[in-house]
Length: 314
Ligand SMILES: [Zn+2]
Image 1: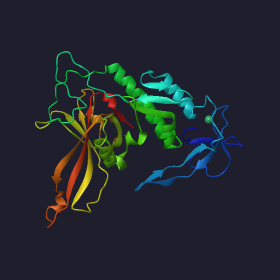
Image 2: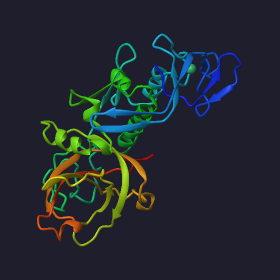
Image 3: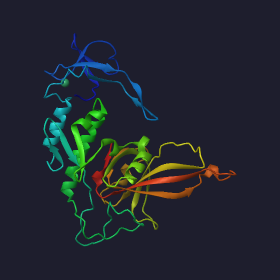
Image 4: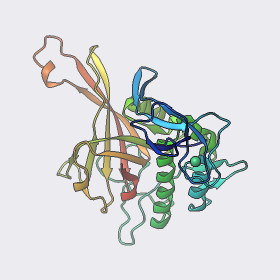
């Protein structure tokens, strides 16, 4: 098993071949002493449910029989070994046969000595005011950042892997000893509504990961005393009387988050415990003059950002 590669060697001339001109020929991995047979995969579109996803060209292992050398940096198992070696075993546990278990944890706001009022990530009925919680178990800052470092390495690997579902065969996600499927944990903009519906109906509230682009930053004001980062919504046409539309907001309670970094269209990954709610019906401007205006109901997904590291810039 391997990751997608942009450069390989021509098997006969041993010249380096780039993904942009690697259409024909026999190729091998460019890592010294690896020599795994590779093939070129042309850019293509992939249909997933109703959506079409563009996949740029890459090289991959020629077949399941070909493997990268154990020490090759394109070997998935090797990369996982390195990630596990650099992680706390309570976070990423090594199981038998190169398999791993990643435990999902809620990253509560660290306790401050002088204040008993802290926003929490798992308060489902917040009303612009954080609630007091006395029984919360706080994760200390060191644990949170090493936790997120491991998560980030895993997500980086996920993005590079030849077959996305390969990761699911290596890493099992666990939350309080319950297995969480990857497709119920990781959501990009094509699956925001799915994220809402899946998690809203789920009996257990576990942290999720969201991939998206920044739409705007809303500074704290009289109405809401935390800064917010809004993500772009996917384009959804108003076809019926009421259209459901996702709305994702990050509620910033960490003072370490530098808002200037989050310009429009910045691509980010967010990890955290989400709260789900629906908005009142809203009439878009262009519909207000219509006899029967079409309306929108926002499916709101809000994540408290208690640690700077919960948002990863891509
Ligand atoms: Zn290799």
